[in-house]
Length: 330
View 1 (cartoon, one colour):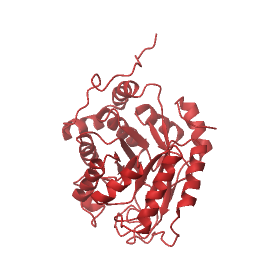
View 2: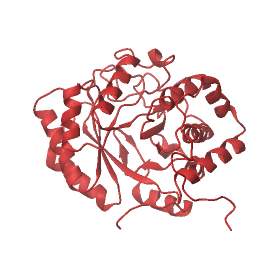
View 3: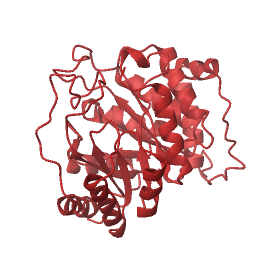
């Protein structure tokens, strides 16, 4: 007899809440780690029986030269680390990468454009072709490309886009210390346009950018009070890169990542909690703790836009040791 009943619960049985308070979330983040992990485990086993993990591959289609001043980003024109000068990728090379990702076992193919906002024209038309091509391969398609209009969101939905990534990055209170060229409200409005078009939302944040624990709770509160919850919630740790405004910050303690993952799982039981940037800096044991705490998706491949990521073979060994279920072909 199993110690914990792993029979999946319906959404009616596993109660979803959209009224979490800042105090409640702060209490979760402050909870003794063993108690927090146990609570997250109970929910995770019910919502995700069998510990299935989605593998997502990420490709930078347009790299560098971004007009936003995000303090952490190597692609901002305001940072000396700006990696512009690389040619934008055209449709067929992107689809070749998508085919390779599928052969390696990825379920979702994510494409990134370092834009402040999507502009109509040949580049947007190419984006639509890439989305159609990725979907024809049988993969989920995700795009991150900044702000967009209602009409652009509609056209992406018609092309078959599965998800649009648009992170909030941090709390409303800490936001202006990280970004000044786009408001928090503009980010929320972008998410509304995506949702209104019938595209699922991929939205999370970054820890380790000098924020307080209350800032982390505030970020999670914004996400957890969305109705419905974001379908995907990436949890990132800052990778401080030379030339960015945050280059001197130390890497966040790995147990803080575990706490964020566990708390996100408790708040949003059916969202995919995606272990994202900073994973290469985590030990094997810390990554397994994150999987145990509620992470059910990882970025899979050798790079994340402009920072490195664990190699595919390392990931396969990690997931096999953890005993999670994945859907790779090889």
